[in-house]
Image (cartoon, rainbow, N blue to C red):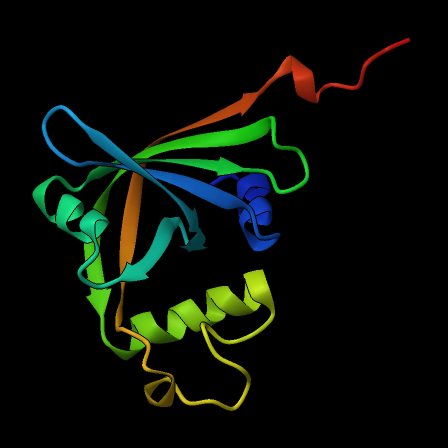
Length: 146
């Protein structure tokens, strides 16, 4: 599925995503996450060994709710599946890319401090194939007429 250009712009402008994964057959776990994309795949980066990483190995389906950073009533619901989990240096490099976007510095350290010296746990990156993208806008996001 093609990611709309407006949504790509929102992601590039540091929009956040609420990530929902299945914690069990009856429960859903939710996290606020940094979000990225590559071509027409969404990317989520997380620390290895977290509960959400266990969740995604049991059920690769998920939902993302991506918010416009300047118009919180403008969002997109993305339903999809993790089609690939990448580990190693590419996942660690990717969190630095996201941290530069969101925080203007490398992940959990200052400029010039090496990853290994900072004691940061290794990351994994999820490549997500969307099967549905639903744009949402609330009347609250519309200007109030006088």
